[in-house]
Image 1 (tube, rainbow, N blue to C red):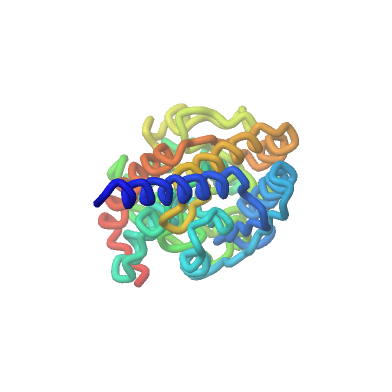
Image 2 (cartoon, rainbow, N blue to C red):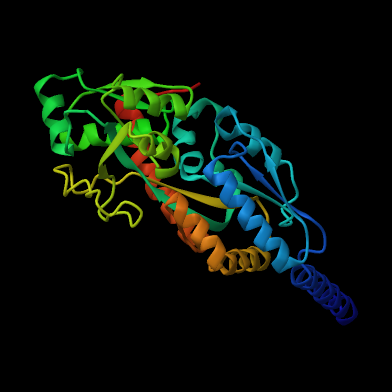
Length: 325
């Protein structure tokens, strides 16, 4: 290559870099769409709409929420996968989509971590152990003791096979060597009505998903599935304090991802903008009512947390021989 061709190549490269940098600095210059795998009115949907509202003000652009629930998250993922990796279409997923779905649907080759790039984190939520108000179980130790005395006789409910509620109970079984019977429900509201009625002995649940039955006096929380108490229910002990395993930790986190190929600088900008939004006092107060903890992870931290949870879920799925193909 002669000097003239070299100069032209350098000028072209500089122009291309300048154009890309300008596009990222100018982002967004049109509406942004946030596709979500969650149904309207759910906790993740409600918080995403608040994030969208705050981002819209910060960006001076419309930020739209597009609900695509159902199909184990595949409907939303398929819709987002076809979009350009330019930051104008992002997808809201939770740690179940990232870490459990690949093991539950192996034949479909469904791996969101490989299909999408993490962009920004939104919140993390911790699960509680709920029993009926009149349940004889007062502690985690009571559940473990009953299950050891009569293997398979203690029942627990969840909002579906392979759900965090199901896999969380499988984790308790693995950590304590007990065996229980899983009763899956189609609707979360139906699940907690059944727990409150004593149809199943116990269930894991988030504060917003179970608070209706709790406030109605049907449920009692006997433990937080974590090593620290929740500020919203400070009287509820941790799993270890309630006589359960010290490492019994059941939580979920929710993030925004992009189709593969988003420029690193643009991903960094969106991550910083979402992190800034999460410091908003109104947003933090709203998250607090859901017992959702705002988290501001880097893309690398999102990947590390998803991979760590994936290793645990892989063990649990194999242990219970679960397949949703």
